[in-house]
Length: 225
Image (tube, rainbow, N blue to C red; front, side):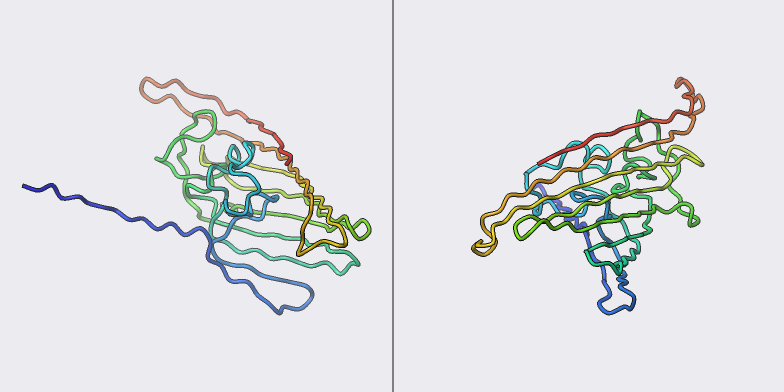
């Protein structure tokens, strides 16, 4: 007898989206499966990171794979003399990549050991909403940068009415001499700070497990590189 090996090949779709190219009034629409436009790091694939590992605060709030889900995003390039863009979006709040929100019941607990019980998206109130505003900076011919602020709002999976909010601010500064050669040399400084408020619903007593009261959990952190 010869043992038979069974191999299961899984394909996971990171991003697949369409983006408009020629809408009036400075508008642009993106729709599909995409990385949520919060801050700097969450919008990037691992090969785009400047360091091998994701910052701790990002993985704590968005999980190891980052926050990404199907949805729609609208960007407005504001009619001012500098680069200024306002972005709003709505995405599915459930699934393993929506760690701080509805998540995936049965694939681990939510924050503070709370079981995830609610995984249904039945109305607009059950979606994950993004707002981001970013502005370009310029200081002479050698310094440039961008400053941004982001906010996320959506339900979490600990029970009906439980919500999560995440706020963040980010800054990138870049120095590059005028006589650079194909972009080199340069120095970049990047930092992000973010804060999460997680309203965990009460958990009734179940068998030998004691009841847990409703509680609001707060996390915050930052990185600089």
